[in-house]
Length: 72
Image (tube, rainbow, N blue to C red):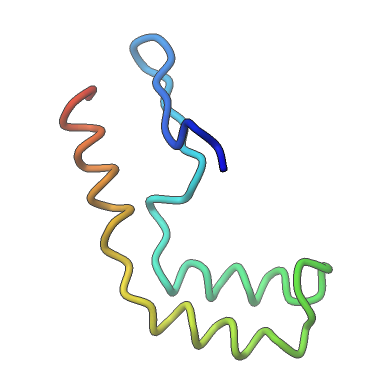
């Protein structure tokens, strides 16, 4: 695990270790794009897509909102 999930450098450079902007559909699109690129078995793509699309993603956007509220 990375001890730093989000950092700020100076006044205008921010970086995250994860993708707070991504929801299930964003990851489903990535699965489609990377289906045959060696990141996972191509025959697993449909199952992975289903898991992503059906996931409830609420914590990452809240983390990002709080980060911007504090440092933005």
